[in-house]
Length: 435
Ligand code: 5AD
Image (cartoon, rainbow, N blue to C red):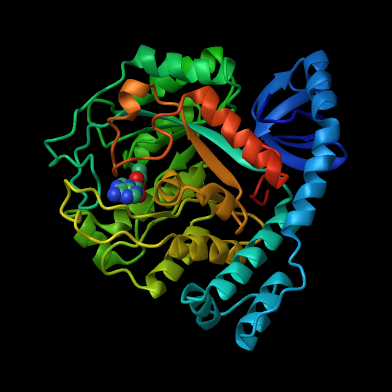
């Protein structure tokens, strides 16, 4: 099974093309010289990444055709808000307002983030799911992530692979291993979008990562996103020129004082300036924060959501903080999964039309049903870990990460079967930007 559906190019206007998917039109950016009207393409994250031979495209489209409509029907049914109402009149009014796509003010959004009762939480999640379906349909991104080094020069108080943790078994994948893993993911497993992530490791300066990206792009087509921590504006330029089109870098918290506490020696503004520069360069920005860090208030979480929106995030990545015993914050109690669910649903309410909202692996580590719960609360994106086993078990940013023991085919099968049961199509279409 392919995790993307090919579309047919109908219009080419300079770099922008209109692509048809079973009658639905989406826009994408094209950087391929040879593209013609009538070609079939794969588009990921709003970028045309590959021309698909007509016969292959038609056979994939044939395979998906019936399923495509069945999935949509299932999704519409499952995301309908139903007739349930709340005894909390204030909440009902707010959710009605959200579902009519009227903006909620700060006080209302905070009220939602403070909800405690199950009934209220369930209605909030349903509203998030309804808005996701209404504006973005049933597509769900399925990205692959390769964690190529767990060396890190930083000493973040929350992170298990921080430089100061001497208990970690450190590893670095060779360039050949990284390229080989990426190509196998694309060619053997069908991934169309990959994230290359590492700790902040000085052994991989931007030119080295750039050359890895070039090698991957030479022999396989995919949307490549990078996540090597802060590489500076020049570094970002270099990676963009090599073909990276997405930057995954969380700002961790929008509260500058909290940021300086949990990332000693660093300034929030430095990180934000790089995220802004990345957007200006044309990167898709994937960002977000840690939910549940000591000292964080609901006001901070709301600011995090607002900040992600103001950074033009293509994808919101909000995950729970999971204390790691070998870190200074290791004794902090584990939070409930409700907080993260509220964050996902409120994110959807804040950015109903554009955001891809990720169900993070950290959330899945916290709650076995996180994927289903998150995808039913407004989220529409998942990431599968495709790092070779001997390495991924050492990338312990927090303990007991979900899926570490699962093979790639197992992860794919489980993901696709869950998506199918929820009526979601594993695709990644459309663009968010104004042209
Ligand atoms: N719990 C959850 N997420 C964590 N990260 C780092 N440490 C932890 C932890 N203990 C997240 C950070 C970072 C991403 C790669 O991993 O948000 O940006």
